[in-house]
Image 1: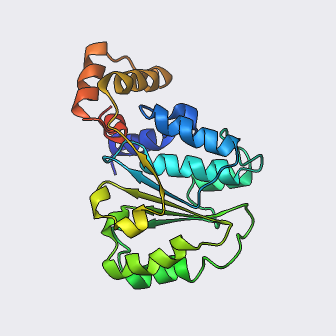
Image 2: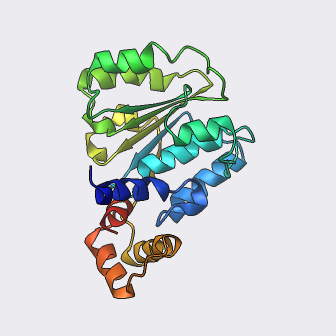
Image 3: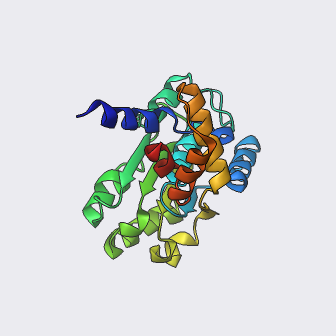
Length: 227
Protein backbone atom coordinates (compact mmCIF):
# COMPACT_ATOMS: atom_id res chain seq x y z
CA UNK A 1 0.00 0.00 0.00
CA UNK A 2 1.37 3.40 -0.91
CA UNK A 3 1.98 6.05 1.71
CA UNK A 4 -0.42 8.37 -0.10
CA UNK A 5 -3.27 5.86 0.04
CA UNK A 6 -2.63 5.12 3.71
CA UNK A 7 -2.70 8.86 4.43
CA UNK A 8 -6.11 9.19 2.80
CA UNK A 9 -7.51 6.38 4.95
CA UNK A 10 -6.08 7.83 8.13
CA UNK A 11 -7.38 11.32 7.28
CA UNK A 12 -10.96 10.12 6.79
CA UNK A 13 -10.93 8.24 10.08
CA UNK A 14 -9.03 10.91 11.97
CA UNK A 15 -11.55 13.65 11.19
CA UNK A 16 -14.76 11.66 11.40
CA UNK A 17 -17.15 13.72 13.59
CA UNK A 18 -17.36 12.32 17.12
CA UNK A 19 -20.13 14.50 18.58
CA UNK A 20 -23.36 16.20 17.52
CA UNK A 21 -21.58 19.55 17.63
CA UNK A 22 -19.13 18.29 14.98
CA UNK A 23 -21.72 17.10 12.47
CA UNK A 24 -21.54 19.09 9.25
CA UNK A 25 -24.64 20.35 7.47
CA UNK A 26 -27.28 18.50 9.55
CA UNK A 27 -28.40 21.06 12.19
CA UNK A 28 -31.98 19.80 12.48
CA UNK A 29 -30.88 16.20 13.03
CA UNK A 30 -28.23 17.22 15.57
CA UNK A 31 -30.61 19.43 17.56
CA UNK A 32 -33.50 16.95 17.63
CA UNK A 33 -31.37 14.00 18.74
CA UNK A 34 -29.56 16.16 21.32
CA UNK A 35 -32.90 17.28 22.75
CA UNK A 36 -34.11 13.67 22.91
CA UNK A 37 -31.05 12.62 24.89
CA UNK A 38 -31.31 15.64 27.18
CA UNK A 39 -34.95 14.92 28.02
CA UNK A 40 -34.38 11.12 28.08
CA UNK A 41 -37.13 10.65 25.48
CA UNK A 42 -35.54 7.72 23.71
CA UNK A 43 -37.33 6.05 20.81
CA UNK A 44 -36.85 2.32 20.28
CA UNK A 45 -36.16 2.65 16.54
CA UNK A 46 -34.70 5.34 14.30
CA UNK A 47 -34.57 5.52 10.50
CA UNK A 48 -31.83 7.69 8.99
CA UNK A 49 -32.32 8.40 5.28
CA UNK A 50 -30.30 10.42 2.80
CA UNK A 51 -27.51 10.30 0.19
CA UNK A 52 -24.24 8.52 0.81
CA UNK A 53 -21.49 10.18 2.78
CA UNK A 54 -23.69 12.77 4.51
CA UNK A 55 -23.32 11.42 8.06
CA UNK A 56 -25.94 8.72 8.67
CA UNK A 57 -23.64 6.02 10.07
CA UNK A 58 -21.51 8.60 11.85
CA UNK A 59 -24.62 10.00 13.54
CA UNK A 60 -25.73 6.48 14.48
CA UNK A 61 -22.45 5.96 16.31
CA UNK A 62 -22.68 9.34 18.03
CA UNK A 63 -26.24 8.51 19.15
CA UNK A 64 -25.03 5.13 20.40
CA UNK A 65 -22.29 6.86 22.40
CA UNK A 66 -24.80 9.31 23.83
CA UNK A 67 -27.06 6.44 24.91
CA UNK A 68 -24.33 4.28 26.46
CA UNK A 69 -21.80 6.83 27.71
CA UNK A 70 -20.93 6.32 31.38
CA UNK A 71 -22.25 9.86 31.97
CA UNK A 72 -25.37 9.31 29.88
CA UNK A 73 -27.78 9.27 28.38
CA UNK A 74 -26.25 12.54 27.27
CA UNK A 75 -26.07 14.70 24.12
CA UNK A 76 -22.38 15.24 24.86
CA UNK A 77 -20.71 11.82 25.25
CA UNK A 78 -17.38 12.03 27.04
CA UNK A 79 -15.33 10.07 24.45
CA UNK A 80 -13.20 8.89 27.37
CA UNK A 81 -15.15 6.07 29.03
CA UNK A 82 -14.75 2.48 27.86
CA UNK A 83 -18.12 2.48 26.13
CA UNK A 84 -17.43 5.64 24.11
CA UNK A 85 -14.00 4.43 23.05
CA UNK A 86 -15.27 1.00 22.01
CA UNK A 87 -18.18 2.43 20.00
CA UNK A 88 -15.81 4.79 18.18
CA UNK A 89 -13.69 1.76 17.25
CA UNK A 90 -16.74 -0.38 16.35
CA UNK A 91 -15.68 -2.93 18.97
CA UNK A 92 -18.47 -2.61 21.56
CA UNK A 93 -20.21 -5.86 22.50
CA UNK A 94 -23.44 -3.95 23.13
CA UNK A 95 -23.46 -1.98 19.86
CA UNK A 96 -23.74 -4.30 16.89
CA UNK A 97 -23.19 -2.91 13.40
CA UNK A 98 -24.65 -4.90 10.52
CA UNK A 99 -24.02 -4.11 6.86
CA UNK A 100 -27.22 -5.21 5.13
CA UNK A 101 -25.48 -5.01 1.76
CA UNK A 102 -23.52 -8.16 2.65
CA UNK A 103 -25.90 -9.63 5.24
CA UNK A 104 -29.19 -9.65 3.35
CA UNK A 105 -30.82 -12.95 4.26
CA UNK A 106 -33.23 -14.02 6.96
CA UNK A 107 -30.46 -16.22 8.38
CA UNK A 108 -28.23 -13.16 8.81
CA UNK A 109 -30.99 -11.24 10.61
CA UNK A 110 -31.79 -14.26 12.76
CA UNK A 111 -28.15 -14.82 13.74
CA UNK A 112 -27.13 -11.20 14.32
CA UNK A 113 -30.36 -9.78 15.76
CA UNK A 114 -33.22 -12.12 16.58
CA UNK A 115 -31.17 -14.70 18.49
CA UNK A 116 -29.40 -12.02 20.58
CA UNK A 117 -32.07 -9.34 21.08
CA UNK A 118 -33.52 -11.03 24.17
CA UNK A 119 -30.15 -11.08 25.91
CA UNK A 120 -29.53 -8.15 28.24
CA UNK A 121 -26.66 -5.77 27.44
CA UNK A 122 -23.28 -7.19 28.40
CA UNK A 123 -22.21 -4.04 30.25
CA UNK A 124 -23.89 -0.91 28.94
CA UNK A 125 -27.27 0.76 29.31
CA UNK A 126 -28.67 -0.22 25.92
CA UNK A 127 -28.14 -2.94 23.35
CA UNK A 128 -28.01 -1.07 20.04
CA UNK A 129 -28.33 -2.48 16.55
CA UNK A 130 -27.04 -0.28 13.71
CA UNK A 131 -28.16 -1.63 10.33
CA UNK A 132 -26.48 0.12 7.41
CA UNK A 133 -27.96 0.01 3.89
CA UNK A 134 -31.16 -1.36 5.41
CA UNK A 135 -32.96 -1.38 2.05
CA UNK A 136 -30.75 -4.28 0.93
CA UNK A 137 -32.44 -6.75 3.29
CA UNK A 138 -34.56 -9.44 1.64
CA UNK A 139 -38.34 -9.49 2.10
CA UNK A 140 -38.02 -12.50 4.39
CA UNK A 141 -35.40 -10.67 6.46
CA UNK A 142 -37.65 -7.61 6.74
CA UNK A 143 -40.54 -9.78 7.88
CA UNK A 144 -38.36 -11.42 10.52
CA UNK A 145 -37.14 -8.01 11.69
CA UNK A 146 -40.65 -6.56 11.87
CA UNK A 147 -41.83 -8.43 14.96
CA UNK A 148 -38.66 -7.51 16.83
CA UNK A 149 -39.02 -3.82 15.93
CA UNK A 150 -42.72 -3.91 16.88
CA UNK A 151 -42.10 -5.13 20.43
CA UNK A 152 -38.42 -4.84 21.37
CA UNK A 153 -37.18 -5.25 24.96
CA UNK A 154 -36.91 -1.89 26.76
CA UNK A 155 -33.12 -1.94 26.60
CA UNK A 156 -32.94 -2.33 22.79
CA UNK A 157 -32.56 0.51 20.27
CA UNK A 158 -32.52 0.05 16.50
CA UNK A 159 -30.84 2.57 14.18
CA UNK A 160 -31.51 1.87 10.51
CA UNK A 161 -29.64 3.79 7.82
CA UNK A 162 -30.42 3.80 4.11
CA UNK A 163 -29.73 5.70 0.91
CA UNK A 164 -32.97 4.39 -0.62
CA UNK A 165 -35.80 5.03 1.80
CA UNK A 166 -38.49 4.03 -0.70
CA UNK A 167 -37.22 0.43 -0.56
CA UNK A 168 -37.80 0.12 3.18
CA UNK A 169 -41.25 -1.46 3.78
CA UNK A 170 -43.79 0.92 5.29
CA UNK A 171 -44.40 -1.63 8.05
CA UNK A 172 -40.81 -1.06 9.20
CA UNK A 173 -40.56 2.67 8.48
CA UNK A 174 -43.81 3.48 10.30
CA UNK A 175 -42.39 2.07 13.53
CA UNK A 176 -39.29 4.26 13.40
CA UNK A 177 -38.63 7.88 14.22
CA UNK A 178 -37.43 9.17 10.86
CA UNK A 179 -34.61 11.63 10.18
CA UNK A 180 -33.83 12.94 6.71
CA UNK A 181 -30.19 13.79 6.06
CA UNK A 182 -29.49 16.30 3.32
CA UNK A 183 -26.47 16.70 1.05
CA UNK A 184 -23.94 18.99 2.72
CA UNK A 185 -23.71 22.38 1.01
CA UNK A 186 -20.49 23.49 -0.70
CA UNK A 187 -19.79 26.29 1.80
CA UNK A 188 -19.93 24.10 4.96
CA UNK A 189 -17.86 21.46 3.15
CA UNK A 190 -15.20 23.97 2.13
CA UNK A 191 -15.10 25.38 5.66
CA UNK A 192 -14.68 21.89 7.13
CA UNK A 193 -11.90 21.06 4.68
CA UNK A 194 -10.16 24.33 5.55
CA UNK A 195 -10.22 23.31 9.20
CA UNK A 196 -8.64 19.95 8.40
CA UNK A 197 -5.97 21.56 6.22
CA UNK A 198 -5.10 23.96 9.03
CA UNK A 199 -4.80 21.15 11.58
CA UNK A 200 -2.65 19.16 9.19
CA UNK A 201 -0.50 22.25 8.51
CA UNK A 202 -1.23 22.02 4.79
CA UNK A 203 -1.57 25.15 2.65
CA UNK A 204 -4.60 25.01 0.33
CA UNK A 205 -5.95 27.91 -1.72
CA UNK A 206 -9.61 28.83 -0.94
CA UNK A 207 -10.45 28.34 -4.61
CA UNK A 208 -9.12 24.80 -4.45
CA UNK A 209 -11.20 24.04 -1.36
CA UNK A 210 -14.30 25.36 -3.11
CA UNK A 211 -13.53 23.16 -6.11
CA UNK A 212 -13.16 20.08 -3.90
CA UNK A 213 -16.39 20.92 -2.05
CA UNK A 214 -18.33 21.15 -5.29
CA UNK A 215 -16.78 17.96 -6.65
CA UNK A 216 -17.88 16.07 -3.52
CA UNK A 217 -21.54 16.71 -4.44
CA UNK A 218 -22.78 16.93 -0.87
CA UNK A 219 -20.74 14.03 0.56
CA UNK A 220 -18.51 14.88 3.51
CA UNK A 221 -16.77 11.54 3.21
CA UNK A 222 -15.96 12.15 -0.46
CA UNK A 223 -14.77 15.68 0.29
CA UNK A 224 -12.27 14.42 2.87
CA UNK A 225 -11.09 11.69 0.49
CA UNK A 226 -10.61 14.26 -2.27
CA UNK A 227 -8.64 16.48 0.08
